[in-house]
Image 1 (cartoon, helix red, strand yellow):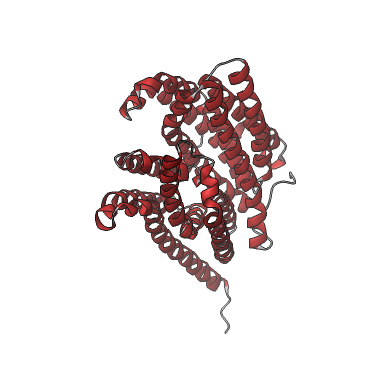
Image 2: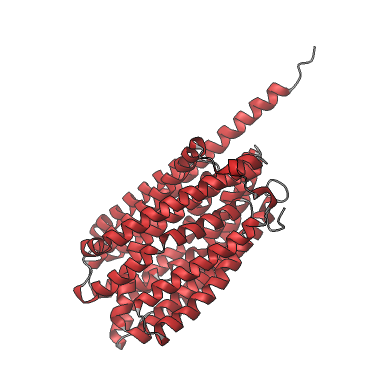
Length: 461
């Protein structure tokens, strides 16, 4: 068996979870880096309109890639459960069905993105001076959805089997490739936003091939012809797990678009301040997402092995680590947040100061309660790893309602500052749902386990 595969049903839960999560965090750092480089190169070489076009396309691409990641995360759950149960025949068939589904989903999303790109951009009122730029970028990027789906599928297979290091190296090398191709396609070939899209797709293709090469070396995944026979039961199981997760991402994205619409009505200063802080969101959430991936794999493998008490132990230990991490980030951002925000804000002195004040108020409120977001990721991912993707989807609906309600009504009660609590309100509503669902589910699993154990105890005469 490949050395990077990790059986998370044995050993100390905290150590296993953290060693799994750390490579994912490092991978996220590189992903954030090349995203920033994309923007810097386009802004400096092509111009402000091209940079704005990338910004407008963010929500469209986020919605589509969110669907991709939702399906891939659903695949991870069943793969980790099969691996934890040491059902290697079922594991191979699951991987085969994941591959088939990924191909179909990637093609469908590409057709939707390419065919309806301009209509979607017109619907969200993309300014006329940049709509052609944006349409070109979204159209080309859409053609890469099958490759993006392929990479996410391959990394989900590896993560489900406890390997977080291969996706890390894939991300590091592909980030470097992406940056080099950006420079060549944009600065040398002068392909503009088209060059950005092509560079990203090519980098994703490398990531997929790198992960695929590792998968091919895993003995228990040596596929046979019978593994590729369509299994409707497994496909149905995969879709039941992944559709709620994909829907959850779509719901959260829809809520974000509504909030942005409301914020736009408060004028340029508010919009600019929120934009500056939201650019830090990925960095603030990075560790939480990695913890989520780790606990989902841990819970999935131990569910397959029927080690329910071990799931509780892992979640309890990660909650402590997650809260501690969030508090550390909060202290750092409260101390240095204004300086970090200045990297994103330019203009005349009075304007910069006004935008910075808005941005820092929003950042201060978010980071002061950042531990709620970290708890959200731990409990949501633990439930998903345990096979429950419905309650996380319900929590996404609660997020949507809380986010929109806060941004619409809190300003009426407490003034403009109410806007800054929209994100925190969404986290709080979701985490209450998720914590309640988790403890109900883990207690039920342990009750079932105790009953099964009692049945096996011989009765003394």
